[in-house]
Image 1 (cartoon, rainbow, N blue to C red):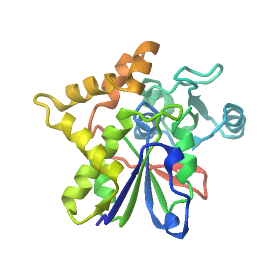
Image 2: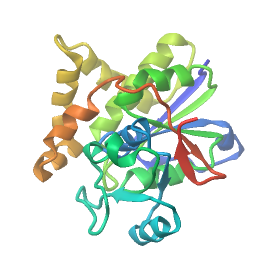
Image 3: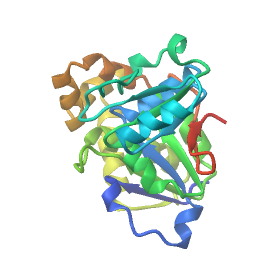
Image 4: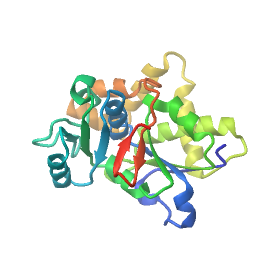
Length: 249
């Protein structure tokens, strides 16, 4: 059962790693949209996600993998010459099933690189909230890492970290957590307690975030509805340091 829950609102705010760092379970959170898109791709049958930090690295890796797709974004926009953008819409089953996906984004893949040497690294989004929380309940030390946007805190990631922490602390009231976790729980409860349909309330809340406003300017309004579908999938993708890829066990 989770006994310590530590939330970081940005990768740059991570504490310097020590020996205890390697024993924790980290959750990478980039609701708009990297974590939501990776979960969608794997749920639709992609064989693995191969995250890359740089565009040229992604292009080169695609050439070395059989039948691979390459996807991602820079500044929220599709990358020239890539097969897919960072929109979940691009990763339908008829396109990705059985194929590896090479993936690079502005914020999400960088956040992953900051926790890649933890004991376990999971990918979380509203799309797999319950499955993720079920898997975390037996973890003693949980780190919730928000990707942010270009070094700025984003409320969409905070909302999700609050949703996770709220469930974990309900299961274990004695858990120890930092102030960021408390703030995230409070932000999530403000949304969860609103009257009416949770998905609609959440999608509306996502529109009024830094990431949400950016996506609306770029014309990706439908993505806000898609990523607000709580528990659409039951998978929990995991990062393998040895294989340098994200897969569903």
